[in-house]
Length: 234
Image (cartoon, rainbow, N blue to C red; front, side, top):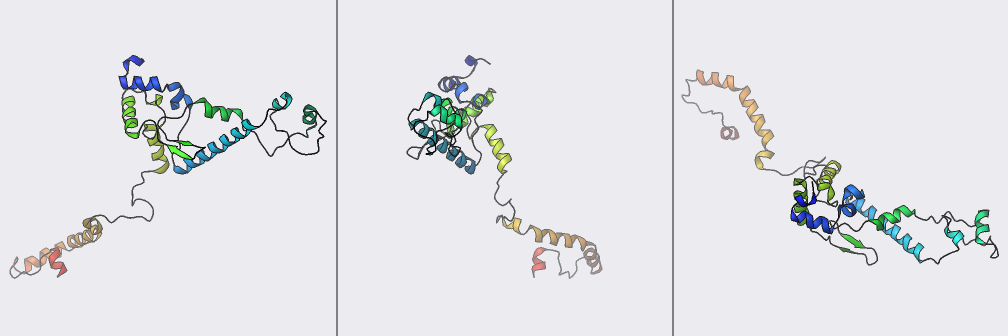
């Protein structure tokens, strides 16, 4: 399907947010299903950004040190006159307690722009900003893209079909009263349905004896026992 065959609303959206930079099909980014997963992802992202800031703020070292994937230790075992290359060759200039994050993780954060369907947190101020596109507009875009079979080209969001199916598999229906040890009040007839069915079952079992007694007493002459719920209460 060509781009010109799409409605104007989708054309404007893809022109502003290209699928190569925002869609889950090309980026492979998935949003967390639960609040715990979202919190853990936010904490990991904040820690990685803090490590990046710390590493970028350190002064530039000798080129031979930059080429090595380790940091120079501050231990006094190496003399000041020893060149950095010799100290690294001796194995005395490394510190395994301060790992450097892999460059792929840092590049992954800066490679793709922020998702317009999700809120963002400013890790410097600690404040959240809402999504560029609201939930109502997200739902409309998802329905329109699903109609043209290009929903996978949209950015991942909470209104997408894939997210709803994954959350349903992960969390279940989550209907109140269906969990273990849970119950709801319900209607009066629902609360008394067990007693009502027991009365009906007993009445059906005693029906042959009741009919026989009815015939013996003259088919209702002077009959004062009727099989009704009001009579059973009295």
